[in-house]
Image (tube, rainbow, N blue to C red; front, side, top):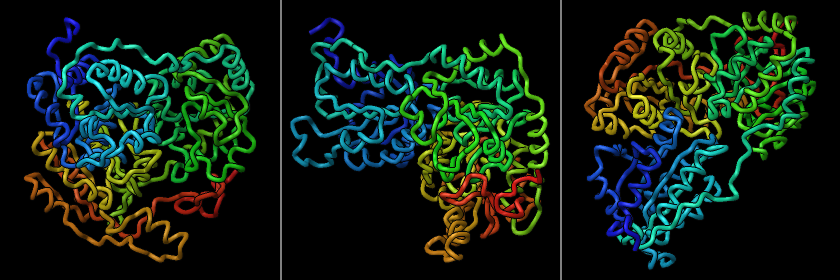
Length: 574
């Protein structure tokens, strides 16, 4: 037995490993297999804050958002069996969006593994496809090494979630000989782009007639927003973002095109379609961006910068690949470009004209309430350091299209997996990470209802968030697709007006406000914003309001229709 491990139980070793890796907050829900660990938490309440959620899925979403705001791994903890399986959705969501999360779950003692003991579940097998890595610790001596590796893997290179399975006897038995921490030798992500490729990229951009930057979530994860702005300003390059990249480029900037994609802005889709060189940074080129892949940016050559080489060329053909961290690559690219001359004025001026044409008035005052009106009022109230989370659905796309964000990590959404129920627990995690910021959750009645029990978490943990519910009495996005592509056959999407969310808030000893008129929106938002505790805004919007323009699934990404577009695909009068 080593001197520094004498009489140290597994639970103590786990807690020390968490503290060593800068963990300050844990989101979780206890149970039999993790009772020893929870018991030892009582000795560390001054160093570790445990936030007791009311459902394990909320713990995983809160840890996800915490990681995005705090710029370090978020941590969640559950018991075995159903407690563990309840975080699977959150792990999948974090995996799709490349978010560093350390998820821990208890398990039956190692002597019972494989015996179908009470609440035994093969979480290693279940989480293998939706985590960056996972572990099952079989002896307390392994704890320190496993946890150090888990944090390193989760936060290095392309981030992602790591799952750790904790059998009960590993927690209660003593460390006899601590295994030395050795970081996996095979895990060495390339962070610096190849100099020759960077020089080629600079030449391609400088020689382009219609260059465009497409910034994805990788820019956010590498904190490369300043380098991105330098590149755009140096050459008058218009910038569009994916939803995951929203906020990395100031959307008030004259070169900002806003969000690209199925429910994005028409000027963004137009610019990509007409670009001859596209500088794509930290972007996966998902189907919600590309539409029909064979027709995506047919006339443009793509420079793809990504820390994950597997993403380059996976979905779209790439003319010039650069494998590396976005911040490092952009820094070097800016240095090369600074030594050369070139600033495209003709293309930039043309795009400026279309940006102005695309800025439609959305201070609409129709009855019933149009969601665009809520977005207008939110833009007047939400400050640049405030954080906005979203659920998944129409309200999410209204936020993507109409909410103006100027700073990174101030808009948090479930991008790759589109997880309903994400927004509210994400708001809780964001608020814990940034207690001085106001945190608002733009949500839908369907999405919010899935996690409504977390109102108790806000109340009892004294966490102030502001859910703003777009209550259209439907599963709005599904209904919109049923209207447009299924001849208005509304199969199982009409939620009606149950429950009354304002009354539910009251049941949790919180404030609920029901809004039914345009004239009430501003006052309700202001009241909730200034309130010291969570206030739920139940805003009654039109039942059949659509988020438009859009393009259909498998359609060409410029074949947008609806809203401000008169004829399919006719984005502007050229």
